[in-house]
Image (tube, rainbow, N blue to C red; front, side, top):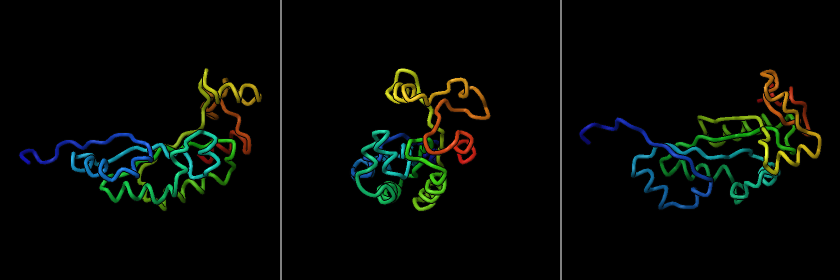
Length: 156
């Protein structure tokens, strides 16, 4: 190649990518080096809560490794604050990232966006605090079910 490889390409995909060996091969051949995948959580209960059903079809660890074995670095999107999350979720997320050899993860605290089903549900349950979302000491409008907002923030 005349100019070497002056640019690196990456994209986003769902974990379903792991089931398409031909697509992963073509992505790698086309020069893609990495893919961002919304893993969200290593916990099946949280994935079902957020309707990420594509992440509960088989072992997440094995599927991430399939993508990596195809030559694509995986970056993960992770979220804490689902109803099934308690203070042990942070260790499980760390262990998941270690097991999958994911070197970059974007982790966020769950936030409820107006006009979404999550927002409506949490509002009906009295678990929204929109004033706290602007407070840098809290930074989420969600009042978690199984831990305090401070514990969620500190674990995050």
